[in-house]
Length: 181
Length: 181
Image (cartoon, rainbow over all chains, first blue to last red; front, side, top):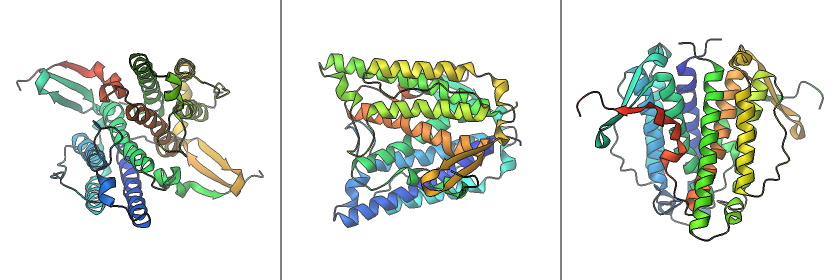
């Protein structure tokens, strides 16, 4: 089997973004059931100087779309980062999934060797990586950081979610046992 | 460039486990500076029914070593999960890194097609995945879940850590800017 950058980029971003959208639904369920303000969840933080849920979701989306754009030299959609409700955050995720899914596997050909430069102008420095290093060492850890922190924020605020919500896409691999227990 | 399972498994687990070890050091620094009990950090949770820091670290280690073992048909070291201090958790991480690093790249040949079965005996079910699906959809999301939750736990408890601690290994890609700002 050929292992491709597409297989680790798109095929990670899409299911994990869908899981992120689903856990936001669970957040809305929680607010309804507890008669609490869903805006409190949107603005919740794990530490005073950490980003609130809204920005965790926005940055998770940006990491997925920015990585896809850099690896394939396509244009990612731009957003105003003004989502203020769980529904608006879900719409942001849906638009990001649309873009990531719209980029075909063939656009990733050779992406592992593509030179990726991330400038740090204030320090007159830059990161230079090839596409494989960029995806593995930059985009995926940062993407997971914001997805998991969004999950942790919701969990910390009492939302009833579990690992099954976080990796819901592994359900497709579940089947009756073939061998005796 | 050939993209291998090794490139996404070992080359993710090792640097991220080292980062995890480093943020535990920052936790110890914080406890010393604030004259607080480091055991409070080890036992801290983000929600009453979430695992404490100790188990987040143990499971992150287990995900890395279990994935390496399954993908290469080697034997992972077994642990008693009885770490009670930050130093003991750091030793657990170090032993896990030793094992993961000890498995050579050649042992991963064909791992993408290896059949991986994860039994769920209580439901008489099982997950069946190939090695690529297992690494991408099971091991990596779970590994990142526990690494990031450990980070979030420390951050929530006032430990002074940031993204630079979380992805410290991207420092090797940093250099002076070549092009004018």
